[in-house]
Image (cartoon, rainbow, N blue to C red):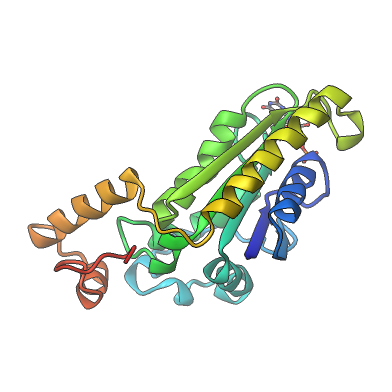
Length: 230
Ligand SMILES: Cc1cc2nc3c(=O)[nH]c(=O)nc-3n(C[C@H](O)[C@H](O)[C@H](O)COP(=O)(O)O)c2cc1C
């Protein structure tokens, strides 16, 4: 299994520890990125990707290794510590660059066959909103199966995590890894994917003819019988 981990922080703390442990338990070829080291550009709002495509983004040269790894991966792990109840700014800055890949624009069909995991750790709270920040992107890219691992570790680093919390993390990580392995290669379409696909298809066949999205769907047969998950 090809696994890509995007770390929304530059250091190897508790969040990276959980993400890495999960990837190793799933097993496969692991590629890791650390933000902002591997991508440090905020979206400038130029709309170029919406008007053309992602390859024309002014940051594409820096973005390309991450795009390639995500496109090739079977499993995508997005990992972020909770910063003021949300994913880190650098994680959100990366995800902003993929707006054009959202289901409501031009989703890449390979994403409908991937699995995804959102990992967050916090001193006390905010894992739910942080995982949601990241899960929204995975879901709108088309990823049908998304696991969420959020841990309140009551510590600032792995060394401070209690034995009890450590054991709970290991149990949850192992259960998730087992589930991912057993789902590998299976076809699945989420209700959310279906909902957004058919809503956009309905709009495209009626009033909503925005380009280049409309032609992208038309070329793939999605306005007729084609489906991105088939
Ligand atoms: C800028 C900043 C903001 C934080 N905000 C929160 C927060 O909103 N809620 C919380 O419980 N912990 C918060 N924390 C604590 C971290 O989320 C927590 O220590 C986390 O496990 C660190 O993960 P890491 O070791 O991967 O960096 C914050 C830490 C920093 C540095």
